[in-house]
Figure 1 (cartoon, rainbow, N blue to C red):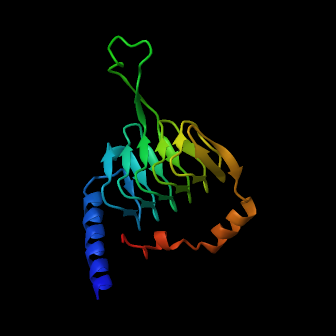
Figure 2: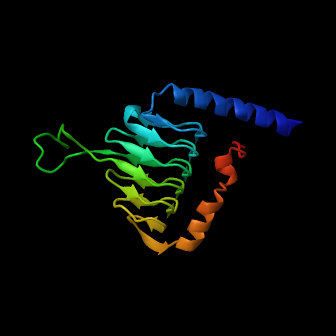
Figure 3: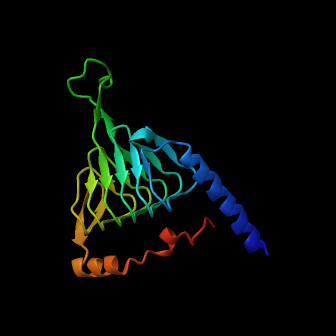
Length: 183
């Protein structure tokens, strides 16, 4: 009985956050998008989230320069994505210039981004990449990369034929299907 009540309360929390998400006027919001509680998004008019995406708890995304998260991507909690930076070199003001550098961030299809990953402006993550928790991405990576570290580096590649087989089956994990709730 307690378990059923807990799921009902959790579903209420998720519904509240989905309503909040719809009110943010994202540039694009696909179907079956799950955003867990505690998220903070800036410049949502430049944020595109395709279908079948799960974003973990306490995510922070500043989409000033544009952020696109493609379908099938799952993130862990407390990720940070920035598409804007300050200029500190040749600045006439301290500690940095009043001007901003805007660089879009793109996360490919079917990526798994671990918890507490930090993605800097201009980074592109290819389809099917896996990013280890706690990584700091300062550069782009090709499809099917397994990435980790600070600064992040290529650890290895995923098997292309296995990935192709998974795509053909079109079978998503339970997180994307929406069968996993906050516990």
